[in-house]
Amino acid sequence: MTTPTAINQTSPIESQRPENTSNSELNNAQTAKSEAIIEVNSLSFSIKNNAILKNLNFTVGSGEIYALLGGNGAGKSTTLKTLLGFNKPTQGSVKVAGKEVTQGLDFVRGKTAYLPESATLYPHLTARENVKYFLSLADINKTDEQINAAFNRVALQEGAWERHIQTYSKGMRQKTAIALAILREAPIFLLDEPTSGLDPVAIDEFNQLVRELALTGATILMVTHDVYGACQVANRIGLLRAGELVGEFDAPENGRIDTEQVHAAFAQRGA
Image (cartoon, rainbow, N blue to C red; front, top):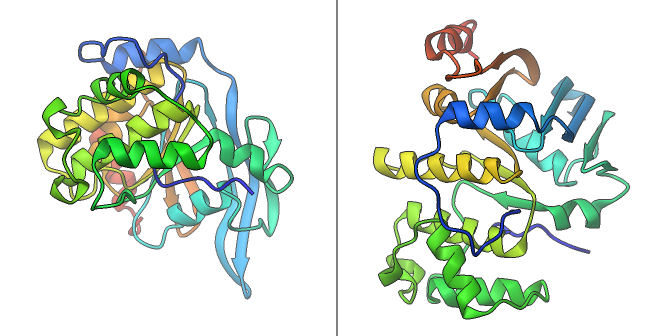
């Protein structure tokens, strides 16, 4: 069975890292890439009569960044686990790249890069050694030049490539994890609280990288409790409250989602 690694995109890894990508570029590009890659239809999930997810409906398209926003216990991580096949829906369905998750688990996991809040890397190995090891588990061979290109694409400083991961900041570990996903050519990213614990500079760098990945056609679903961060990077936000999707917000063509509007909805009845 194929298992999605915690450091599990579709882009030519040899390409140069572009200058800062604006949300208007992302929104315009996404308009032309409307194919639904993630489809959640009437999804409900219960444990012993305790409803965790209640009739969720949303889609995420190619080249889109969708932020599932909610507080603790809203059902965000449960949604990701269901997309990865760890939870079987009580009702409804979940499709990834056209495949029902419960019927095509190996296919879905092979297409998916899952990045948890803390990327799982071996601390006693260097970034390069970690990447080579995880690629070998997937029977993927990449040259040092290709690995270097991936590191450059995520702006991991060259002087850090041969350092042990235990010396890395969280932001550097996240970059290493995304470099591995690029090398795996996984077209779908599931990000679980990806900026939690990062400093403001690292958050800006991470958001810029996510925008660049979306521009290459990657499908990105992130779950977060950070209203400001979600509005900064996403072109659509779904507000999750007690397992229910209670609202969606779309970015205007040449701008970002309104933070105050989302915050007001988030704060209502304690989202």
